[in-house]
Length: 429
Ligand code: EPZ
Image 1 (tube, rainbow, N blue to C red):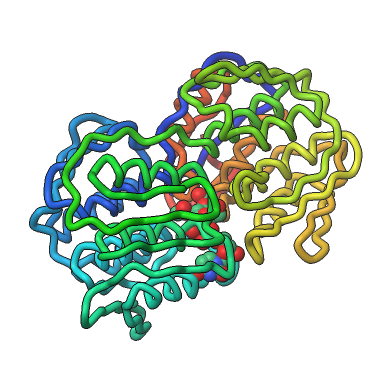
Image 2: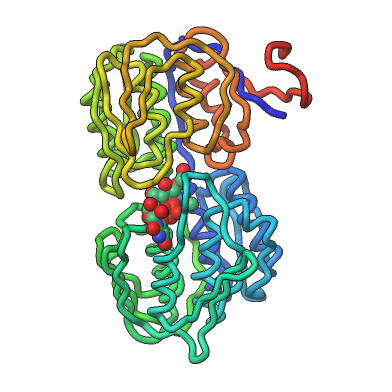
C-alpha cells in the first residue's frame, strides 16, 4: 500500500507550475473518437485518469502515441465502437463521454456504466434525455448503457432540468455531426466545456455559445485532425492557493487563467489572504491568520464543488464559525470524519457543514476517501505540526500531477512511501 507522509507546519514558499485540466483533458481525449485522422493533444496532465482513458482508447483501436510526458497523438481512423473494456470504464466517471463520442461517430453506443468518486447517487438521466432528443433510444441493462438510432441522429432542442457538466459535454459530442441544429438550454458554463467546444471547432465542428447557458451546434459531415492544447487546471491551481493560505506561506502559481479562479480568489481574499493576479499567474500570500467565511458551492462561475473539501480545511484553521453549503452533490462530506480524527469541530446539518474554526488540529493517520478529499487531507497535513499519514493516495494521483514533487519543490516535508500491507501505521519509517 502507498501512503503520503507529511511533517507539517512549514510555510510553503516558491513557484508551482499548474498542469492541464483533468476535467477538460478527459472529454477531449474521448472526443478524438469523432475524428478520422490524427489529433495531437498538448498539455495533458500526467495523471492516472488520463492513462486509463488512453488505455481504453487504445483497446478500442485508436492509435495512441505519447510524444512526451504531456503530449499525445491520437488517430481514431480505425476505432471500433462498443469495444471499451468495462474493467477500465468502471474506474472513471468520465468514461460516460464514450456514449456521446460513439453516438457522434457511429450513430450508436455501447458502454459500461461509469464509475467515479462516490458522492451518493450520480444519475445520467439528463444525458439520456439529450440523446433521446437527438433521436437515439437508450437502454440500461446488465451494467451497460446501449444507445441506438435507427435513422441516425438529427439536431434537436435539449433543455436540461439540472445544470450538468457531463450532460452538456455529452450532448455536444453526440450533436457535432448530427444533421441540423442542436440547441442546449440551461447548459453548464464551466471553462472546460469551452475547451471541448474549442477543440471540436478546431477539428471543423460548428459549436457556438459554449460558456453560456445556451449552446448551438450546427451538425457537420465530418471532423478533421488538429493540434490542441488543454487549458490549465483551475482546481489544481485552487488547491495550491489554499495550501499557501493554510501554511501561512507565499506561492507563485504559474500557468493559470485568473478569470477561472475568480470565485476562489474572492473567498480567499475575504479570509484575509493576499492575492496578486497577472496574465497567467497568481501570487498568493498569507500570514496564516484566516478569517471565517461562508461558502455555497455552485456551478461555474460560482464557488466550485471540487474545492469544497479543501475550503473546509481552511475554515477549520480560521477564527470563528464558518458555514459551508454543498449544493451540487448529495453527499460530499464523507471526508469530515477524517478531519474529526485530526480534532476538527465540524457538524453536518443537511447539506451544510458548520465549521468551528480555531480548534487546534493534530496530526493523525487519515484516508483519502476521494480525489478532492485526499487533496484536503494533504492541505491539513501541510498546515498541522507533526506527522500526518494519508493512505488511499491512488485517489489523489487520479487527478493531481506529481503533487508530492510540486510540494517538495516549495519546501514541504512530504514523501510517498510504500508500506507492505498489514504493517501497522506507526511502524513506518
Ligand atoms: C463533473 O462531474 C466533474 N467530473 C466533477 O469533478 C465535478 O464535481 C462536477 O462535474 C461538477 O462540476 C468530471 O468532469 C469527470 P454534473 P459530472 O453532471 O459531470 C446532477 C472531480 O473532483 N445530475 O455536473 O458527473 C448530479 O447528480 C470531480 O474532479 C443529474 O441529476 O457532474 C449533480 O447533483 C468530482 N442528472 C449535478 O447534476 C444527470 O444526468 C451536477 O453533476 C447528470 C447530473
